[in-house]
Length: 154
Image (cartoon, rainbow, N blue to C red; front, top):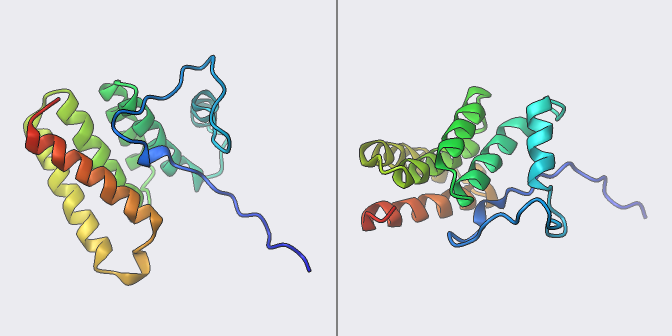
C-alpha cells in the first residue's frame, strides 16, 4: 500500500493568541513551521510558487502585527491583496488590516476594514463548499478585531 502523495502545505500562524509574540530570530522556530526569516526571504526573493505568495504575505502580515509592527502588517496585507488572493485569504487580510489600523489608532479605517471583513466572511459562510479551517481562521481574526475595536483598546 502506497502512502498518499505529499501536498504542499503552508501553516498560517493566524490562530496565535493575541498575547503571542513571534520568537526572536536567534531562537529555533517551533517544530513544523517556517522560520519567519525564511518566509520573508522566500517572499522578498520571489522564489516561492505562485499559489504560495498571497497566503505567505497574509501570514507575514499577521506575524508583523503580532510582533507589534502594525505599519508593516498593513504593507504586507497590501502585497497579498495585489496578488488577488483567494476569497478566504482576502477575508483574513481584511481582519488583519482592521487589527493593524486599530493598533495605529485609526478608528475609522479600522471600522471600515472590520465591516469589509464581516461582509467577506458572511459571503463565504453562505457557501457550504467554502466552509473550512481557513474560513475559521478568518473568523477568529475577525472576532479578535471586533472585540478590540468594541473595547477601544489599542
